[in-house]
Image (cartoon, rainbow, N blue to C red; front, side, top):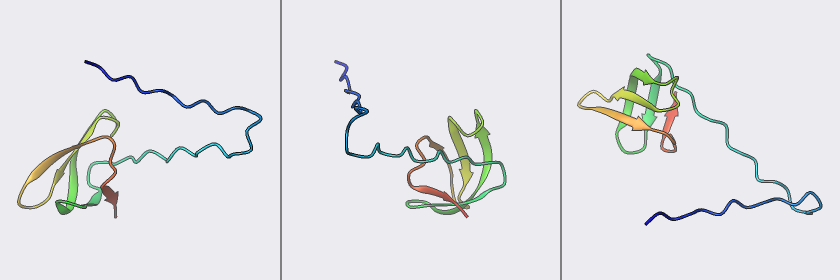
Length: 75
Protein backbone atom coordinates (compact mmCIF):
# COMPACT_ATOMS: atom_id res chain seq x y z
CA UNK A 1 0.00 0.00 0.00
CA UNK A 2 1.34 3.41 -0.93
CA UNK A 3 1.37 6.26 1.58
CA UNK A 4 0.51 9.67 0.22
CA UNK A 5 2.35 12.62 1.64
CA UNK A 6 0.37 15.83 1.94
CA UNK A 7 2.10 18.93 0.63
CA UNK A 8 1.80 21.83 3.03
CA UNK A 9 0.51 24.96 1.33
CA UNK A 10 1.73 28.36 2.41
CA UNK A 11 -0.87 31.09 2.34
CA UNK A 12 0.29 34.45 0.99
CA UNK A 13 -1.19 36.26 4.00
CA UNK A 14 0.48 33.99 6.55
CA UNK A 15 2.67 35.75 9.15
CA UNK A 16 5.05 32.77 9.19
CA UNK A 17 8.07 32.56 6.92
CA UNK A 18 8.20 30.00 4.17
CA UNK A 19 10.72 27.29 5.09
CA UNK A 20 13.81 27.69 2.93
CA UNK A 21 14.78 24.73 0.79
CA UNK A 22 18.28 23.47 1.52
CA UNK A 23 20.73 23.83 -1.36
CA UNK A 24 21.39 20.57 -3.24
CA UNK A 25 24.81 19.04 -2.82
CA UNK A 26 26.80 18.38 -6.00
CA UNK A 27 29.86 16.18 -6.16
CA UNK A 28 32.40 15.70 -8.96
CA UNK A 29 34.89 12.93 -9.68
CA UNK A 30 37.97 13.44 -7.52
CA UNK A 31 36.23 15.35 -4.71
CA UNK A 32 37.39 14.49 -1.20
CA UNK A 33 34.37 13.72 1.00
CA UNK A 34 33.59 12.68 4.53
CA UNK A 35 30.70 10.42 5.51
CA UNK A 36 29.30 10.00 9.03
CA UNK A 37 29.38 6.19 8.83
CA UNK A 38 32.25 5.37 6.44
CA UNK A 39 34.72 8.19 7.14
CA UNK A 40 37.03 9.90 4.63
CA UNK A 41 36.89 9.04 0.94
CA UNK A 42 37.20 10.21 -2.66
CA UNK A 43 34.43 10.32 -5.27
CA UNK A 44 35.41 7.99 -8.13
CA UNK A 45 32.20 8.04 -10.21
CA UNK A 46 29.12 10.24 -10.48
CA UNK A 47 25.74 9.13 -11.85
CA UNK A 48 23.44 11.69 -13.46
CA UNK A 49 25.39 14.89 -12.65
CA UNK A 50 25.38 13.79 -8.95
CA UNK A 51 21.57 13.90 -8.89
CA UNK A 52 21.28 10.10 -8.69
CA UNK A 53 24.29 8.67 -6.87
CA UNK A 54 28.01 9.00 -6.18
CA UNK A 55 30.42 6.05 -5.97
CA UNK A 56 32.95 6.76 -3.23
CA UNK A 57 36.19 4.92 -2.44
CA UNK A 58 36.71 4.87 1.34
CA UNK A 59 39.99 2.94 1.19
CA UNK A 60 38.81 -0.39 2.57
CA UNK A 61 35.47 -0.35 0.72
CA UNK A 62 33.56 1.30 -2.11
CA UNK A 63 30.05 2.55 -1.46
CA UNK A 64 27.33 3.89 -3.76
CA UNK A 65 25.75 6.83 -1.91
CA UNK A 66 22.35 8.00 -3.21
CA UNK A 67 20.40 11.25 -2.79
CA UNK A 68 19.84 12.89 -0.33
CA UNK A 69 23.44 13.22 0.76
CA UNK A 70 22.48 14.15 4.32
CA UNK A 71 25.47 12.42 5.94
CA UNK A 72 28.10 13.18 3.28
CA UNK A 73 30.02 16.44 3.00
CA UNK A 74 32.60 17.78 0.56
CA UNK A 75 35.94 18.69 2.08
